[in-house]
Length: 287
Image (tube, rainbow, N blue to C red; front, side, top):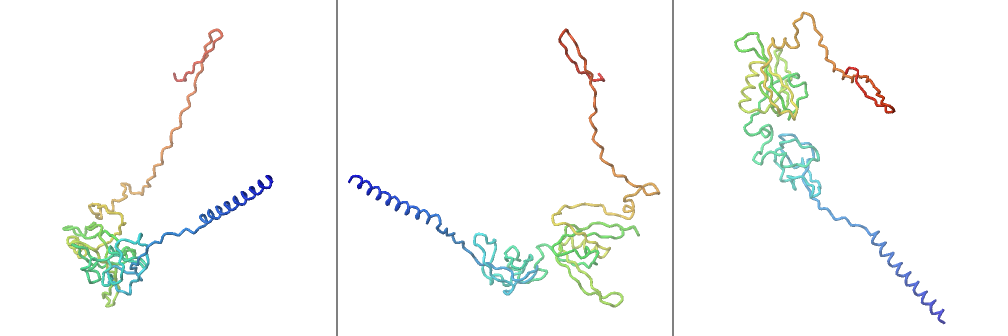
């Protein structure tokens, strides 16, 4: 009887343990395999360019569209509606699908497009006619920076020309072509480069164009250093790489001197015997 009772209690305990284990297993499994719901990220719609917009363009509604951006990463100065941009003038080039930002637009009081919208305060736009060589062989583009060099005769010294840099770090506003009648009564295309200068620079540029022949030298975007020069005359030009000899002299490049090898100094070994004790003394030969 006692054995039967113990067996019944043992069976009940095993069943209860199994039920508890099964329940705990499913609870833990539900927690581990449960879907993690990512927090929703808020988005906003901002205006982007539907086509490339150039400097001086006046924006119309068909030039734009709305695109969704994450609110946390939306660029500063964006526009949530297209109506806010209609009539604004582009100051910096905007590419397709690029957000239209306030920093790329002319001030609100500028309502007309064209070259006048690009000119900064206290600056003037001045156009000069150049050929392909003077225009840096077609590599010159709006936004580039140039130096202006002029070649002319020295005042009071006939047939003694000098070339001098007269303007540095001048922005290029535009590059264009226009038709001009040549001496043969035929129209030819002439490249016109429009530079942004202040009044004093405009006076220098006008005099350089009227008195001599100008040349444009393209600068790097990061090169803002001003370099002062005396100008180059024919005599100083011919002295470049000159020699006093009538024959050409080849300038040999100086090769770097080979490093001196450490000099081996043989040593003398003197053994001093004092009974059973032997001592050795090392000495250099030159000593």
